[in-house]
Figure 1 (cartoon, one colour):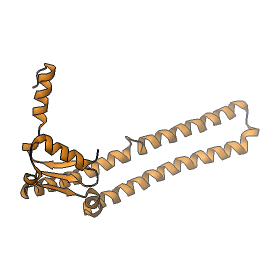
Figure 2 (cartoon, rainbow, N blue to C red):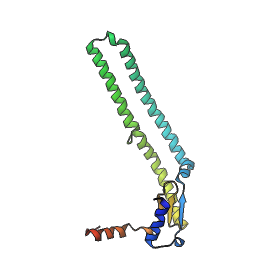
Figure 3 (tube, rainbow, N blue to C red):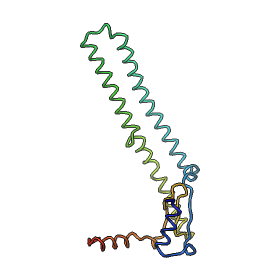
Length: 175
């Protein structure tokens, strides 16, 4: 279901008409593309990513060097020495995979750094949205890009009512 249809359904369920509701929206992509602090975060992240990619490239170059040395000397090596070199290359490959996961994986260093740098910027953006919504009398402010609700008057929050109704229907007690 498209976000606007959800909003229409929500308004009908809540029993108020659109004439009484002031709805606004923001384009989060435009904000993210044009807010200077976001650009600075992107520059800082790109520097960090280049640094980590440099470290990764050094590891890969060392592995390539090991493989070339092994290929050149393999026929002259004893079985024991050959096994040692193969294990060394295998361990290096594992180290590279571990490095890649720790630095660039879903919970890696680059994503933690991004979250750390963006957190205060996103807080400023949210504060600005809250202020505009409050000062200009909006009931709801949506994100045009995702359809997410970014601001709403507390009077439209039905969470407690829904929790009470759930408690009644299941016979459980809420806090």
